[in-house]
Image (cartoon, rainbow, N blue to C red; front, side, top):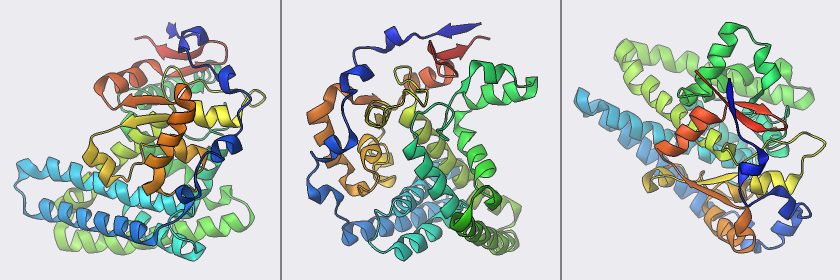
Length: 344
């Protein structure tokens, strides 16, 4: 049995209120400086995260066992900042020159073993099809009939990832979608192949060195646990970005770009130290209006959007209640009744 949440229960902000709005209408409200890259701010962000990651690893190296979880969380969060800066590189909002973006993106993604170009290409597809049924590749819920066609084991896996084990979801996304360059075509296939081989070469060099110098426990302590900390935030940020009971997915023939990006994206406040280390990735609405906005200009852009379309902006605060809503209620999808939850 499932609990059903109807469209009528979604609240006062309906997509019909902005059905005539276009993305360019929103962009016209943005001053030019919102889109300007600032090399000093960009490279300062890199330096800050390198220092914070270094501080985290130093803490892991010298702290007693009972403080290790604290430094794992800190280091994993700082490594998430690496991903966010690489994310800017993927959108070409870090530097003017493409080769700089590609180089920095590959280097920042390497400790996370993330192939840069495959992520960049798939992520751009997500931006082009945000909350579009059977197209969006980021946390799209299964339709009820699709879930019903799965075997018992497949359904069990899906229930875990859409439930309280949401925080491992990004690991599956990383492993299943980003390493097979045969899924890409033309020039993109060669780019993805390079990124995958770059990551595999880094792993082939890095892991033997780690095992030889710090042993199995050292690999767990210095790499695996911070990496899992990164994936906690990766999974959490990405599921919260577009998943609440009042955000519908839309069939392709009904999908509206401005509505999907503006009303289908969540601004979520996290503890300020997390936002600092992760470069305001949580300020996500303006990023979906224009992905070329540098991370250090997102807050200014968000304020402009709120001043003009405040009734359409969804703002939440990271909390147990929010994650309970997502983990216990946002599971399956029906085009008529929207989200449905599992009942155990």
